[in-house]
Length: 169
Image (tube, rainbow, N blue to C red; front, top):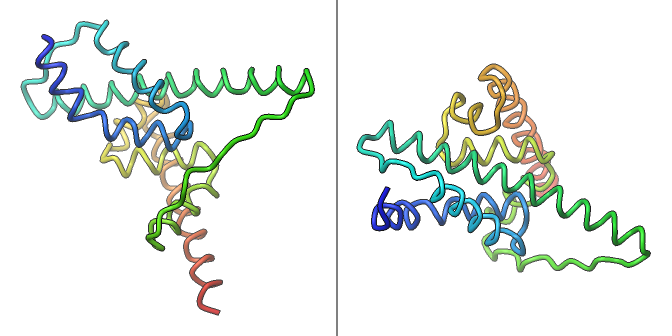
């Protein structure tokens, strides 16, 4: 992929990868995770996709790479927390301002209640990946991806129904 092709891919993919990274690592580290993702992709010297199938494969590869960088970031944060706790300091974190849109806020709150793995599956599915592609991104079998996807959607549905039931009483 030459520089112009990579730039085109970058601008087409950056917003969704950033959204995914933010959902997994928070706002503070997402930019670095996505920057590292694109550096990794650039160093792979990939061919520019010439078909829809090739584009989907490249997009899935980008998600697999960002997933790996997210996992690295989480391990790094865990090590940092451990060291901080060991020396008795306390980390202070800030939460980004919430959206004024009630539905968006309700969904975001519901997603936060899911486990990390469930949230990841739901977000990848929402990003338009098939079960097979999700399996490739997460390095699991398609059967496992299908089971995890089904369970995650059921759990999210239950959380949303519970919240709606509580708000209507």
